[in-house]
Image 1: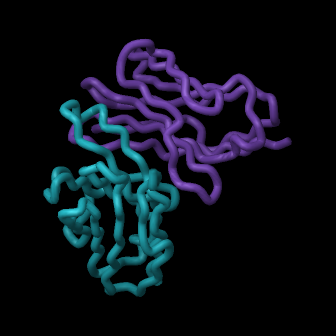
Image 2 (image 1 turned 90 degrees about the horizontal axis):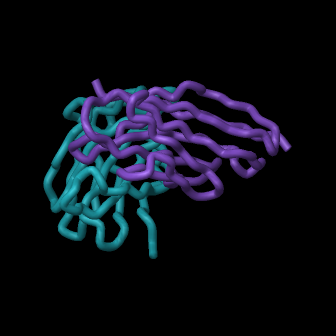
Amino acid sequence: EAGVTQSPTHLIKTRGQQATLRCSPISGHTSVYWYQQALGLGLQFLLWYDEGEERNRGNFPPRFSGRQFPNYSSELNVNALELEDSALYLCASSFLAGDLLRNEQFFGPGTRLTVL
Amino acid sequence: AQSVSQHNHHVILSEAASLELGCNYSYGGTVNLFWYVQYPGQHLQLLLKYFSGDPLVKGIKGFEAEFIKSKFSFNLRKPSVQWSDTAEYFCAFSGGYNKLIFGAGTRLAVHP
């Protein structure tokens, strides 16, 4: 079974530019989550999409946005890039069962975004 | 506020030593608890999880963790570490809205 895949592996941008990161979930999973792993800050929850809808959002500014496509893949867009956006961005997927708390999340390898 | 505290940022052990990594969470409701591991150059993998039932849970590679509700703790243990256990370990919980709250991580270095 293929795992969660992310592209690109590395992305280098300059301040003010926009970045687009992509994620393909495990087959059968409808939920996609985005996390930011910045140096010294651990993993922080960014966004949760399920069935094409944004279901929850972490404490990040609106220039972090995304979407989920009908095939359940997802994009994370970061506008007006700032130096502190440099981080590893992880995507995770799960299927959504009745008990939300029991949805184990499986992680992809991440996209390392560097903002110069 | 929902948060996870991992007590040690860096741990250095010799092979065969015992390991215990501390984790405390802050949340007033029902939680599910997880330990994830990130080996060098690899992606985040689930070590073990607690949803309900026996508070002592066993995971992969000989790891186990104990949920102590009264202490809001979920410490990770392994009786005898190996060089291949060198990695970063993250404690996390989900308390609602399907998001995981992670601790800052503990970097474990095991010397042969």
